[in-house]
Length: 125
Image 1 (cartoon, rainbow, N blue to C red):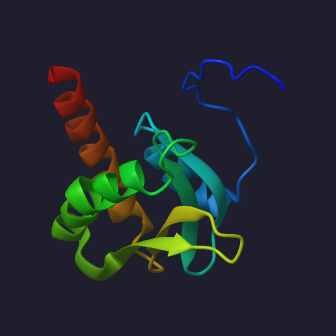
Image 2 (tube, rainbow, N blue to C red):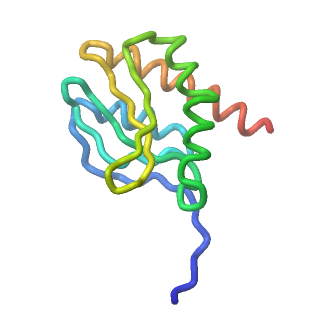
Image 3 (tube, helix red, strand yellow):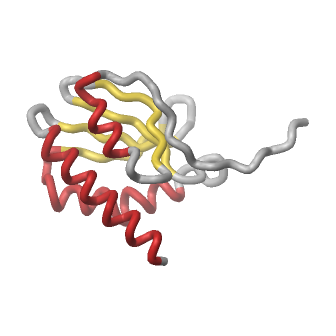
């Protein structure tokens, strides 16, 4: 049996569709968000995990989406973007962001703003 190693968050370069690359970069400003897959669509979408998903897969993701990001993003962009929590066929839990066509730039600006706000709140605690 192998020993579990201590984990550290780091951003990894990975190929993504050109039309969704800035969206993925904006989401990566949230320190604990890990992009799983994405597509420029239309509509554009990104699937992700958040936090210590290897411990309590749903808990940190739910707190992040329902307690901050989902409400705050809706306040800034309305129905231009849709966030959801999914239980996949394989039993894993992940978040999904869908961005309506022609709303990408506004959504990216909102996410960048929210990431700065969120990271500032977390570093002050």
